[in-house]
Image (cartoon, rainbow, N blue to C red):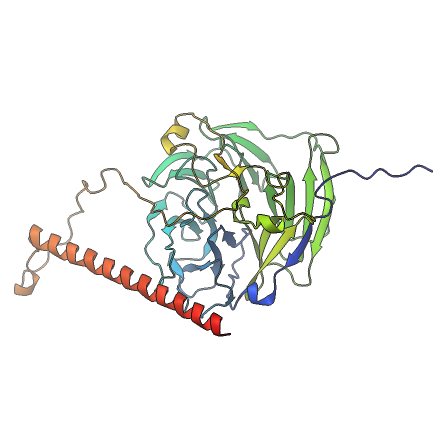
Length: 431
C-alpha cells in the first residue's frame, strides 16, 4: 500500500487560543459603519478601534496593558465630521496614527504615552485632496512620513505627512471603486484590487501600471459560500497568510512556498461568534518567550478579544527559526529620497531579547511657507471701544499665554495619569 506523504513544515501545528476573559477589552461600542476595512489597528504600545459616536467620527486608543472594562468616559480621538472608515499606525513611530473618514479627509494624530483626560481633538496635520469619502490608508513600509490614501473618487494619493504636502496623485488608473491597497516589502511598488475585477501592480513614482491582467492563477483555493469580505494578513517572516472573514467566525491560514503547489493549507481557528473587524500585531509586539508567531485582535459588537497563535515547542530557549530578524521602527529612507527614486529594504532588528517600545517620539510637521501667506481680508467691523484691533505685541502675548496654559494642562494630565497608574498598582497589590 502506498502511504500518503505529509509535507514537513514547522507551522503544521500552529494553534490559536483566545486570551482569558480579564485580558480582553470590554464595553467598547464598535462602529456599525458599512465599510470593508478592519476597524482595528494595533502596535506594541496601543490598540485602536473605530467606535460609534454621535455627530462626527471617532476611534478609541487604549494602552495594550489596559485590559478589562473600558470606562465609558474614556477619551476618544475625535476630529472628523463624519464616520472614521480606516485607521493605521505608523510603522516608524508607535505614537502616531492616521485616520481616514467619510468627510473626505485624512488626519494624522500624536497619541501620548499617558492616558489623556479629555478627547484628543486636534490632529497634527489634516490632509485634504480627495473629493469623496476616504476608505483606505496605508503607511509606506520603509520611507519616513509617506502615507497612502485611497478614496471613493477612484483616486490614490501619496502624502508627505512631515510637510502636509501631496507627493503624487494616481488619478487615471482605476475605472471603479478601489477595494484594497498593499505595498511590497521595500515600498517600491503597490498592488490594488478594484471593483472592475482587476488586480493592478503599480509603480507609483513612474505613475505606471506594470501588470494587471493575470492570465492564470498559480493556485486556486476554494473557500466557503459566505459573502463576507476577507481580510488578509501576511507575515513575511514565516510566509504565512491568514484570512479572516468579516462576519465569519474563523481564521484560515496557509503557508506560501516557492515551489508548486505554492499555497498549502495549514489549519483553521474557529470560534462561536463572528468578527466585526480584526487587528494584526506587528512581529515586534509578540511574546517570543511563548513561541507566539501572530496575535489577532478580534472585534465583537461590544468587546475586543486578543487571539494568540503559537507554535508548540518543548524548549524555553529563543527559537531562531521562528523569529528571523524583522522590520524594526527605524525608517530606511526619508520621503524625498523615496520620491526621487531611491529604494531601501526595511531596517531589521533581532527579537532575541524581546522588543521594548521606544518612548514617545513627536511627529514634527513643517508646512512650507504656511505662515507667510496672509489671511484673507474679512468683512470690515463697526469700530467700538471694546473692539479695537490687537497690536502685534498684544497678540503675541495672548498666543504665548495660550501656549503656556496648554503646557500646564498637559503636565497636569500626565500627573493625573501617573497617579491613576499608581492607584491601579496599589489596588492590584491588595487584591
